[in-house]
Length: 382
Image (tube, rainbow, N blue to C red; front, side, top):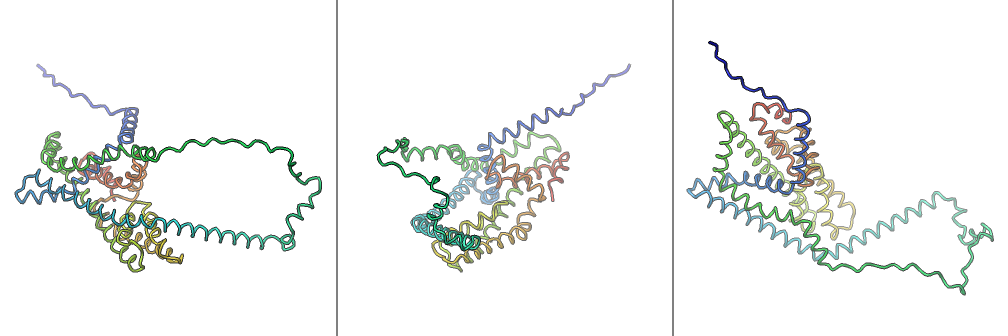
């Protein structure tokens, strides 16, 4: 008697139409849910970054919730002190805003005067001398008596002028309210970041264990390696950029102090860390020292020196220091980085440019630990 063995159903690959629809739905979810997803990604990166500090307190026999509270409170205190110092410097800068306005107006007038002089010189160079000496009123008489414009008759009343009704100006609070409402969603989601980070740190063991229970057998070990790979990548990327920004800030502060640039303690770090923004970092790093020097320097040459020094620091950091400090941790090739910046910048704007590399590096860390996705990891890798 023959025994019939049940045959397992063959899994059919998804049709191209279903794949396109799934891809489109994913893009729509990333775009319309960007505020929520950006908040979640930032909280995850911060939690991965602070987790080793929490583990150090746990080794001192402190409960994990207490350790997480201490670390989160210390991080918020550091951010508060940094914001207080920034506010102190900016308040002094705000007092000199009228001086900046006068300085900019004087520079604009000087440029306009030079442009007028250049136009006059060009006119004298291109127009023959005999035409330059002709009186415009006399030249108008050469056209003919009949072509002269008749003077208006004083007995005839002039036509009624067009009456323009200006709308009543809105109160200032209306503009302030509209400005705040436009950022309401961002501020609301940003207020959740400290709580998300705390719960991710205090419930880290439970979350990791529950996440691994979603997989069976060997897949559980693969998921654990992928978890650790993403966490290590996030910590390495953030710390690498912080160290690199700190180096650029110290060098920039030393240079700005040497040339006696106003507000060099705040302009140096701002210029140094802005220089790390992908693709647009160089012009963004040049703007703060240029604006800070408007009330101090009269010679245009000093502004060219500032721009050249900031550009050299940017090129030195991006071409020599960045591959050693940051590139060795993310292992992404330049094409993958460029495409990721274009993709996430299009979906999430400026914050997408900052999160593009860690998100792509996290995807690569997952692909490197999943056997069926290792080809994609090699495609993204260096």
